[in-house]
Length: 117
Image (tube, rainbow, N blue to C red; front, side):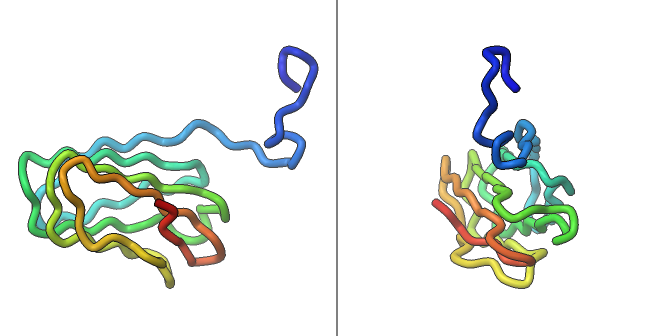
């Protein structure tokens, strides 16, 4: 119940969502970044020193995530080859990023994520 005596939509549906987890990473070429294992939404900001030839991002295990959870990823530099893994199916994952690019993927079913933007 909120301070005005009402309940939020998330409370009415029985879903309680916490604030997103923020990961700020300064990756290097060839590195693998493990996304924080949580059921909260996650924001990842990549700030490499310069262009990266390759980068891999590994999603959390299926058992610690929930359907509807999002992972937002943005980068301050070019990533020539971006690989996202850790789930059985990832629909429409980007293969690279330009300076300032960002995207969101959402868990849509067990071991299945899809790019939303």
